[in-house]
Length: 232
Picture 1: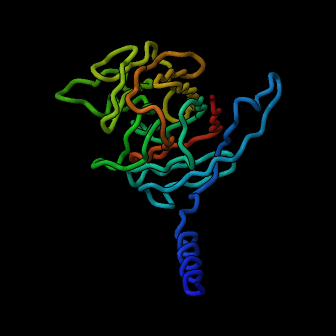
Picture 2 (picture 1 turned 180 degrees about the horizontal axis):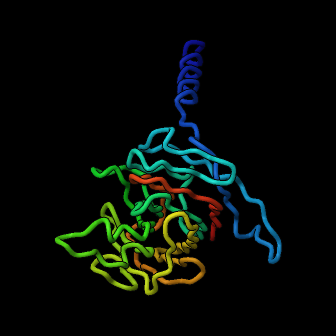
Picture 3 (picture 1 turned 60 degrees about the vertical axis):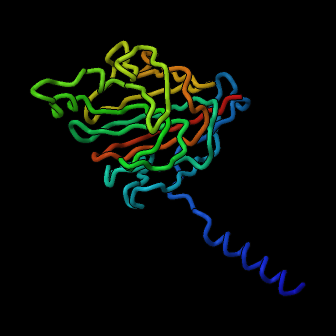
């Protein structure tokens, strides 16, 4: 019996030692029932966990989260979410910078080092000029908040551009300027507001619950004022 108890203790202690610790803390999570009209509610700090970037890819400086963009990969939220509103502000520091956030993701990297889920694209405006294809520019919709399923996740686009959904209005700002996304995710439907106006959406996502991931994809990007409002 004594030996059995010792073995159980060793197993528990080993599991605790190997438990993953948060890479950093940034942003806040707020329960919808805590919201009070006209009052500022302080939520719970969000823990972010390493998936497949380097630890020094990310750094918290005052009120900003700075991502170097190298290597390509993601960090994930501590918990999975189903119905929620994500408020996130971002600015690229390099022309043609590429990044994004994934919602309803399993946070398991694929062959391209990125996970599945619904991607909410964050591209700097010069991306279309720096990625010519056969002498032609890609559609400008690329850089204004496209939504699309990745890693086998299927969606129905509100404003189809192939299997992707494009914004109906070009509202993103360029290098060094802050952009604000409000991403409403409910029961397989996503609606995206860019700088104060809803301009894009998808529905019937085949995956409706998962982690929120922040993407590192080759260029420095800054984030601030990340808030997750969890909905019933």
